[in-house]
Image 1: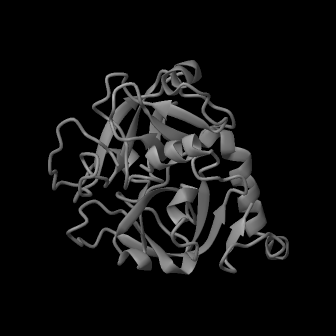
Image 2: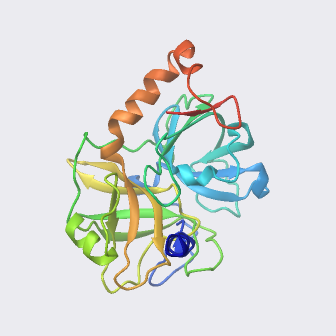
Length: 277
């Protein structure tokens, strides 16, 4: 029991660690940044708490552990098109979270770290700075591909969050490599990414944000920033929720949302608009 507690405490629920952080005050023109969402709660003083991924006009994909401190969806809002958190330039869009769905199998530090937010009103028109990411195919794999993680997390472990949206490129490692480096198998719905020598990673503050991979002419949302042991340490890559593994779960949640009678039979946790699926 003591060993298990030690392991869980050492897990850091994930910020990006960039090799040479710079303050870029120009908005990105690359499309992989456009699905990035900033999630903020009233309990955090409306400051950035977690990232998220816009996947269509009414859905944001994120990490379930982001809501450990507040499972009331009405206490949250999302900012789309955000870039510089210190400046409001009129290109952002604030949306309210109406309903929170978390995975029924989520246990802190043990996988199924995935959640869906239904937003109101739906995004009626996408812009040059707001555009959803494509979902991968069911079971699609990105092993050995270099992908991009983005967020406003801190540049160093225990540091302050970033003012502007940052990004880092990381290779997706094979399951065998991940299992070897961690000394145990990851959960079936997880994968790891990073460099064996460390130096680049995701860490506290970027939780829930996207890892996107360019394939077939589009940017696909491959992973959700989840957890890691510290930040950017050698031989300890970051761990991500494998979105392709959860495509059936995502589809189930979206179907349930269109059937209020069926949805209202689901178990709730702490709030009538938080459903466990």
